Image (cartoon, rainbow over all chains, first blue to last red; front, top):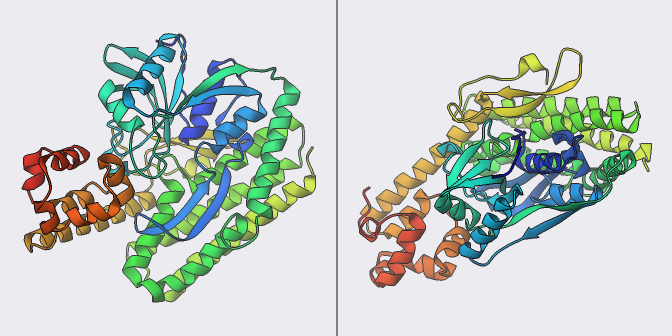
Length: 337
Length: 132
C-alpha cells in the first residue's frame, strides 16, 4: 500500500489524476484548475457526419490523455506509461508498482465500473482512476470524481482496464517516473504555454467545427434540427449536448468555470492583473452554457416545441461563441512569453 | 456561477457521490463546491434512458416476431455498438450482423455462442432463450 496517499476529489477525472499524482510527488502547488489550464484542456469540437449513441459527436475538452501529457511535459515530469496485450501481464505490472509504494493512474471503461451509479454507465472508455494499494484480492482505488476512496476486486479492475470499443484502454497505466527541477519560473512557463496552446485550439482554428467558431457552427445546425429531424429526435440530440456538457467526468459549463478559476490562479502566479477581466468572461460563458442547457431541457421535456425555441437556443450558443472568441483574442493580444 | 446558485437536486448520484463544481464565493473568488445533482442534467439522462428502453422493447418484439436473434437483443440491452461487441468477441461486424438474424444464430457453434455469452455476461442457456 502507498504510504500517506491523500485522496483528492475533482470535477474532472483526468485533472484529478494529474493533481493527485503530482501532489503525491511533492508538487504541492498543483491544483485542478492549474492542471487543466497547463494542459490546455478547454476545447470545443463538433465532428460532422459522425454519431455517438445516435446523437451529435461533440466534445468540450481536449482529447483524452492530452491534458495529462501536456501538463507533465511543461513541468519536466517524465512519465512511465504503457499499454498491454493481455490482462495477466497488465495486472502483474500494476501489482509490482503498487507494491513499491507508487500510486498508479489507470485508464478504464465506465460500463463495468461497479461503484458507479447504473444510470451513468455507458461504454465510455476514457475514465481515469488511481490505484494506491492492494489488500488480498482487493485494489484500493482513488477515483477523482468520487467523494471517498473506494475498492475494486482484481476481476473487476481487470475487466474495466480491458474494456472494449472506441478508445479501448488496453490496460493503459501511467505514473510520474522522475521530476526535474520545478521552481517559480517553471510554473509560470507551464501556465503561459498552456494558455498559448489553448489560443490555437479555441481562437486560431478556423471553420465551424473546432474552437469558438465551432460553437457557432453547432448553433447554426440546431436552427435546422426541428424541421430536419422532428421534435422528438431533435430533443434527444439536444439532450446529448447537455449530457456531454455536464455528465460526470466532462462538463461544458463546468469546464468554462474551471478555466475561469485557472486564469484567476494564473493571474496570481504571473502577477498579471490583466487576466482577471478575461477570467470573468469565461465565468459569463459558463453561466450562458448553463442557460442554454435549461433552454434545451425545455425542448427535450416537450415543454418548448416551436421553431423560435430552437432559434433561442441557437442564439445563446452564438453569444457564447462570440464571448469565448473574444476572450481568447484578448489572451492572444497579451502576447504572454 | 455563484456558490449560492449551485444546484442541489436529487439525482442518480444519491448514495454514491456528489460532484465538484467551481463556483464564485461571496468575495468573488473561485472555490470548489459540491453538488448533489441538477434537474436539467437528470432529465437529459432520463430522456436518453427512455430512448434506450424503447429500443430494448422494439428488440424484444423483433425477436418475438422471428425477425432478429437474441444476439441483437443483448447487443441493444448492453448499449453496445459494433466496435464494442467486436472487441469482446473477436468477430467482424459483418459476421455479427449475420448472427443477429435467426438463421445465422441457429448455425452458431457452442464455441462461438460461449464468446457471445461471455461478452454479454450471461450463460449460454440465457443467451439461447432470453427472458423477455
